Image (cartoon, rainbow, N blue to C red; front, side, top):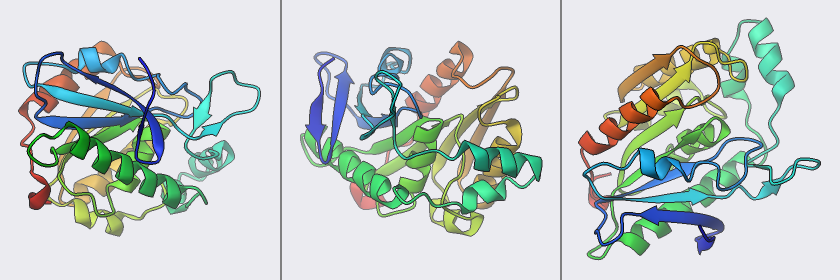
Length: 238
């Protein structure tokens, strides 16, 4: 799948041939993954509802790791400290210097994708990702993003925002998934984000699973069903 430029980032795109998409799903890969890491999800997440999928490529490369990319330099020491102190809120409070710029870039990509695939105006949007990509999607959703219909957060975390900042998500459908044996972003991280999202007034669907830092087949199936039944909002509705 070839790279194409959408807004400020290079992206890979996928859609069902011969169909007119009803919405655009923008999914961001995780820390240390190649830019095409989530592309195969477009097949697993496709159902009867025609969708266009966009997979942005993070701008940072990681030295010594062939093909590895990142949205920002992740502070794993801070994760360890937060867990030792049993204070996942420490992670939410951190604001990496690149986070604001990355969030703005992702919003620009989403807007460009909605315009590109929409024939009669911008299409509704679903924003999401895995791990660091999910954290970015959540942060980007806190800014102005027309047509946002939902968030799809695979094994993510809350970064650069407090629970009170999430009130803008009230009424927004969100699917959050996380493995109870996750050794990269351990379970307390998921519990903290779950509590913050639940308190925001969002329509939260939380799917825990027995497993580690990944997206198992049953979670992909649940995400596909969620996407198929998601109420779509036009740009003027958000």
